[in-house]
Image (cartoon, rainbow, N blue to C red):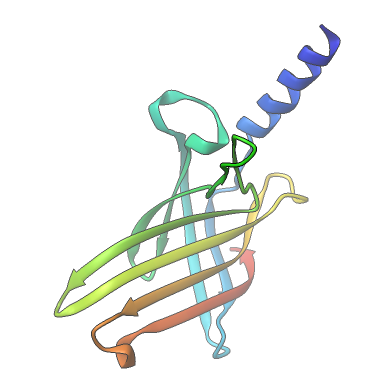
Length: 143
């Protein structure tokens, strides 16, 4: 019984992880300022589990819905998650650009409340690689 109670307490602490919303400013791989706005945190289908956790963010005037990546181990039959970052991938076909976009936001779990430390934004144009871009924004500080 004690083990069950302890397990439930640990799981609920993970499920209710706190992410500090607001505007964060950092420096990109070219030494230029970059920023991310962290908005609401919600849980898909109202189920408070890290696999259902969703974070609304805005990068370069584009709104994203990020989630923890799933980690599936088919051999052992386990479905887990990577709690260290949130990510999203979307296909794109805008203005004669074809490809995909990827956003990854890394989290500092030692800070309370948790906060983003960096993000990676990739715009991959598979028809014209010269139009592909990659922004690595590091050293995020809340404004």
